[in-house]
Length: 384
Image (cartoon, rainbow, N blue to C red; front, side):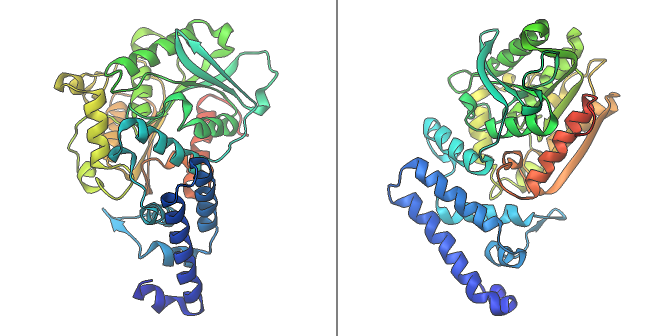
């Protein structure tokens, strides 16, 4: 425990020390003693929930002094989670071989995503691409066309397959927004480099809007959305839908990767210590975009892509402590300058990946709830 903690704590000092030691010992023990992965995940989830439930003063003592960068103060719960990850001594996914990294990232996502309820979940295919259809409880049994979100998961184009990292988020959005969600399980790099993911997502989207009766989709109330790499894919679908005249009512872009190999200030300012690292980005981009021509392709380089007429309205959110922040905001400005009815916001204290934290009571979960409300409003649905 540091001097700051002792000076401010008073009667809480012993509890602060004991709590910090207990959290550290628990996380290190489960990581280093051959405990089965499923049990490890449960213990870590309980530990995280317990930490987030502590009084704010105690969380501050455990997390350390406030972090301020670029005029932004890091959210306290986010800072605490980052500290817990450090004391657990877990190697980040990007430092592991990709197959092991996929397992590690799936476990981390399950820990923060929790067990989200859903009405029904059906795995099927659209144009040969695996998809998962999630129907919220409020819409189960309906026979009329449903408002629908086609969701594209993040993961640097290399992680997140088989719905292992974003199912909790997709379920949360379905229930909170009151929409059917069709989550696309596109092919991943390095096994399938560019343009495999873009081709899969477009094929699945065309199949859904081309046969609305089969998918029980209301063509007037269909949206695309995604985070990070998935935000890039969703933005690509929105541009393509406008160019081809495909039905699309709304786009929800969550800290999208908008310019591969960019050197925007945020990529340098937040390239280590805030979950998404320079090493992760280098691995993702070299795996999915192995050539310079791939990086410059307008399907990937959204900042320099042509904006066709008729791009649907939408909302784009960035995180203040995210390397992708500046390029996402640059793309938002491009859309707005082109006349697209897009709203843009920055969550200054949050980091890349915050939308997955729907299983813990924190500021990030509240923001995801607000995004679900924006999606609902964007599709013309009455507030729930």
